[in-house]
Amino acid sequence: MNSILAHFKKFSKADTLKITDNHIIRKLSELNHKGRKELRERLLEEALKMTDNQPSINWLKSCFNELDKHAFRMHKVFFSPGTEIGETLSSLLREAQESVQLCVFSITDHRLAKEILNCQRRGLKVEVITDDQKIFDRGSEIQDMRHAGIDIKIDHSKYHMHNKFGLIDKRIVFTGSFNWTYTASKHNQENLLVTTNGSIVQQFSDEFDKLWQEMYTL
Image 1 (cartoon, rainbow, N blue to C red):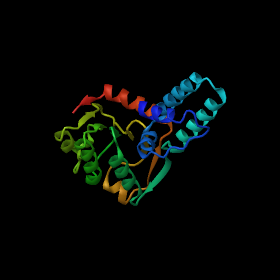
Image 2 (cartoon, helix red, strand yellow; image 1 turned 60 degrees about the vertical axis):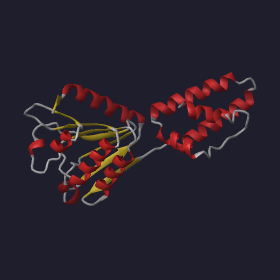
Image 3 (cartoon, helix red, strand yellow; image 1 turned 180 degrees about the vertical axis):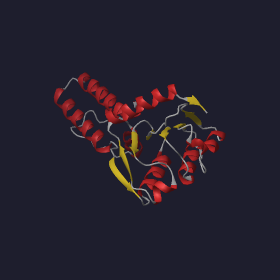
Image 4 (tube, one colour; image 1 turned 90 degrees about the vertical axis):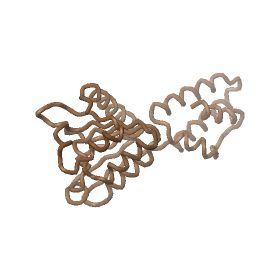
């Protein structure tokens, strides 16, 4: 955040600015909804400190325009059978930078499980919530993930932990009917919604944190 703000301030005397530094562009794209809001507030504070009003207004407008231009947004729906959902989930896991939080009913798709394990090997914080009965299904990848050091939590209920959602870096959420199984990819009619909408991401993040506190460590 500080490096982004410092870069913007370099152009405080200009009427307009255009960010061309790839490092700053990448940092802007990585900001979540909360981060973008904080940056806007800090840019406004800097503009208010400037003595010459008109340049500060133009500079602030340019800053906001560049922030919006380079902000990462994604709102898409995918369907199966087919490869769309599996490839999308694999891509999201590969591009994760800090954390992966999964709340999914069942994981038997070895390809997706491999991507989860790779996240853990890259040093990301990986947390998985799943159903206590489904971990005994043939082909379940949960025990292997636990043995690899991934934090796993399960319910203890005669009912199912039937959620199917996940969060990437607390800025992307995906949810839908899709189970992480080969059958869901190859045969079932399934759907997956992926969005960076800040309000929706926050609601799912709050729910994950609540469930994480309620569930039992495997």
